[in-house]
Image (cartoon, rainbow, N blue to C red; front, side, top):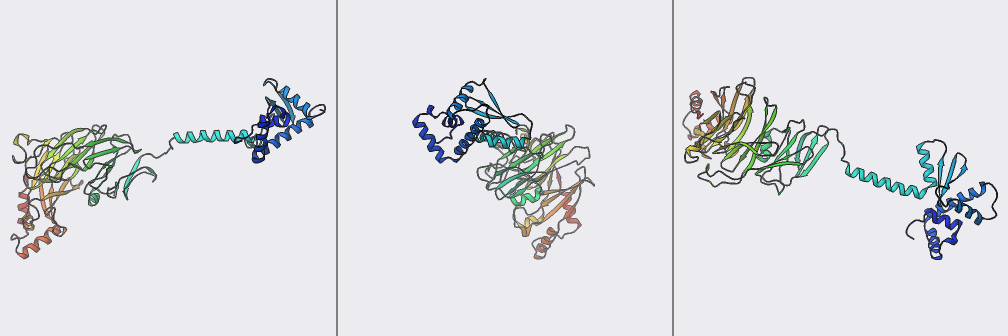
Length: 473
């Protein structure tokens, strides 16, 4: 027999084994010889009935008569017999018995006695309780007090999102993506990946941050480089934005390459008390575009195209009206020079100023507050790496309400020839002055000594650069 012998069968074996068939009797004896649990239970039942026989009123002539009396009395559940056992009582019915408490005692002691007197019932109950607990634990999500993401880290192709206590809220494999941290400055992040890969921000203003993910070109399958993905604090994908197709102009000399998400940032709309999301999408050459996305579904709300690369973006309340403006900088391919564009976040639309070769005149309309071109230098022409400069980053002074554009005069070249020029603007975007970076001065003087440039670095040099700033809007 594979199953344990129940109490009824053991009682029949002890009290009236004539009711058991010969084949079943043989099987029970074989099982008792192999199973120590059933043997122990059988001995307990024998002791129990021996106790009853000893303590029952009157004397019985033999065990058979005692057995018959007990079996007859226990034929129906209603005919229950209680036998005193010190402070307990024994209920016997339908061939089974149960210890009944007459006085209160501790749960621990009650459990101990239950196990002692009902080993098989305890085993079955324990299995049932264990199964119930397992089901509850399986379906019940673990509760965590701190559910707001405060840090996201990509390390060794694994993304982990942490709460303020340092607990991992969720994690995901991100094969091919560069190591990255959301607590790093964007300029430091770009050194590793050329793009912004991660951004933690409370986009729907509910007090819980969401995670934005974009992919570099080395990522494998998980994320498309032309798409932006938004995950909630539990790691569930909320929406995905893909850049889509190209406009038929902007690049007369090169074929369009695939879009990729280069940067994204948020602006706090103080009047509407909401957070707004802006994305910069780029290609290898041109065009690039600035897009505002609807947080609820990732759909485009407005977009601006530039006929050239966008290398940097920042937000700054330039005119101190309590509302941030959007500053973008990079290259305007049509004019072969660096540009600055400034937008009211409520109106970011149209196409950059250009030439007819790049953008037809009827499309050269946009909502920029300012669109400024910055002149190239004779240093750039002498180095000969490219025919354009670009705005690499913005430096902001909140105290003085000024913004400075750091212009790289040798983009795409080797680091040994990098040289910077800084254009400083007041809060009306009028040029205040031009400062040559140390690397520009060092490299320029080397070229001057070698006879590759003729014009000396003096006040007239920077004055000419300031006068070369062109305001298209």
